[in-house]
Image (cartoon, rainbow, N blue to C red):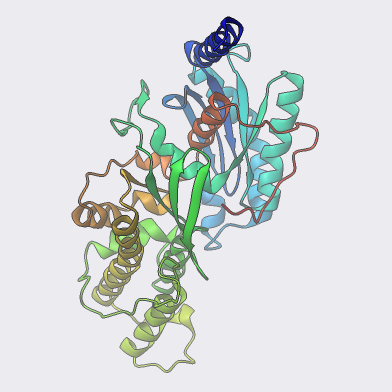
Length: 380
């Protein structure tokens, strides 16, 4: 090798080292904005792991009387809350716009009107504050809540370390049920997903049948603690693709079970069943459904673990805060599982900011603040 080629190689190595030093020597602070459903959320995360602030304004109380989220109400609530929430996130993080290195925003999946408020706000801020903009997939973001391991904020219980690659990710929420294998950041394969209702949606519908308040997951879980999870033998869906999910069958089985327990036929209205069921029956139905629904996703997760042998298994989404899910996974997996704080399982800006940090650190493409559009049906 000639002296010239050797010098060129050395210079190339030095350039790469200097680039990496610049990337990692300076702390990276990202503002995350999340408005995919009924929570208006913003957070500041440093270096993809340190939570500096996490502010959430929920409009859940406005939707509770309807038994589900009303898109128009959610969008109006976002408009009212978005700027105060962002200002509060910066205040709690003890930083100003000069400290922020970029803005990450959820652009899909979610409700169109809700997404639009967050994206247009982020676009405007990126332009006026001259900050790079990172477009974030909401579903992918849920898993990156598990990368947050440090905070000085009170009331958080966080993992001791970040997930190791390859990892298996289970996303379970009101709108999503997906199983994903991550080989590295931005390198993943979607193994399976729900073919009908998401698990959280099924919980909401069972809760409504039992006369329980919205949101259904926590309501069913609370009642299930008083019941016998093996009282009723509810079915699990059997699908051709071993990693796909289906919850419409168990949900319908609960309806038929309740009708039978009340001595009614299949044409009896579901919204009248709760008045005929006594509390012990409701508790047993809730417990039996919860067991079967959670077993369904845990069965698939164990199957994928055995096939791919990942170094970590993580969960994300609102249902990830379920004590039953955490108990079943921990009992059946041969490796220890660290769970993030329940406050980071439901929709939040921290998970969006964490993924935004990773994108910035790995020099992923930024979004054009003049052109970024929402994608309500975005998939992984």
